[in-house]
Every structure is written in structure tokens, then in C-alpha cells.
Amino acid sequence: MNTRIGYLGRLGGLAASFVVLMGVGSAFAGSATSNFTVTASVSNNCTISSTAIGFGPYDPIVTNDTTPLDAAGTVVITCTKGAATTIGLNAGNNSANASGTTRAMKSGSDYLSYEIYQEATRTTVWGNSGTGLFTPPVAPNKNARTFQTYGRVPAGQDVPAGTTYTDTVTATVNF
Image 1: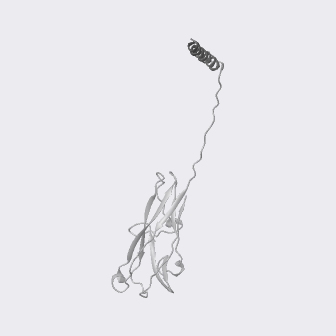
Image 2: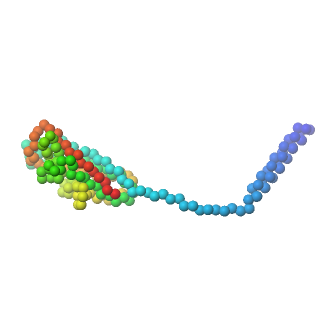
Image 3: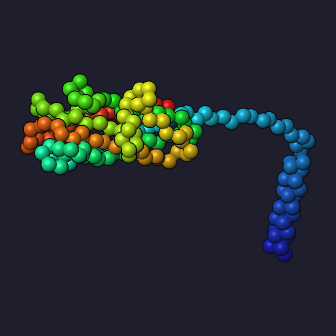
């Protein structure tokens, strides 16, 4: 009998605790609210990378005596959605020594003139200001966009054989 009374006594204690807890919930008679603002600003940003224009062999006697040597590379930009941009290419490190073009590759004291254009027809020189700037459409999203660079070494240049000509051009995205 003692065990049974102990058990019922514990049940009674639990019931009393339940009643007390129910009373605690109803002890709050009201409530209040507060609104707050959450903000963030998205910055306009772009990155740029490029691939080389590798012309390969230039033959001033036969192949490239009357036919220019063409090659292509790429400029890749990744920008914030909605960013309006321009892409410029500077004249390269040897531009002061170019003959008949804006740009020149160098080997020792010799120069091989070349040019970079905005389109496959090679009519608009890709420069670093004014009409030479390339203006792509506004960024439709944040995905990378690739644009071709169209290089041309003019035909008939009188340059020494057995050397590799190089230049460094800087690509800049303005946003």
C-alpha cells in the first residue's frame, strides 16, 4: 500500500506542477512588437583576364610577302549584373617603334609591326581611349563573358629570321 500511495502522490505532484506551469503561460497579459530594417549594398565590380595572341611563324618572303598573318586571342570579363563597361587595350611596350601600325613586337633591336582589332573583319583598332575602346553590352548576369581579340601582322615586312618577337599589351576593364 505504501508503494501505491507513493506512486499516486507522485502523480498528484506532477498534476500540481502541470497546473502551475499552465498558470505561468497565462501570467503574460500582453505583447509588443518592433520592426527593423535589413540592408545591404551591392558594389559594382569587374575582373578581367586574357589569353595571348600567338601568331606563329611569319614568312616575309613567300607566305606573308603579300598576305598578312592573322591570329586571335580573348579577353574575359566578369562583372556585377547590370554593370556598364568598356574594355581598353593599351598600345603595348614597343608602340613608339611601330611602323604603319599602333603596335610592334620586339626582338633585340628589331621590330615586327602588328595590330589588334575589335572584330574579325579587322577594321576597328582596339585601343585604350575614344572610339578604340570596346563597349560590350551591359552585363546580363554575373557570369564571365568572353570577347575575341583579332590580331594581324601586316604583309611584306623586312625582318631578320631566327628570332622570336614579343610585346606585352595591357587589357583594362572600366566600370
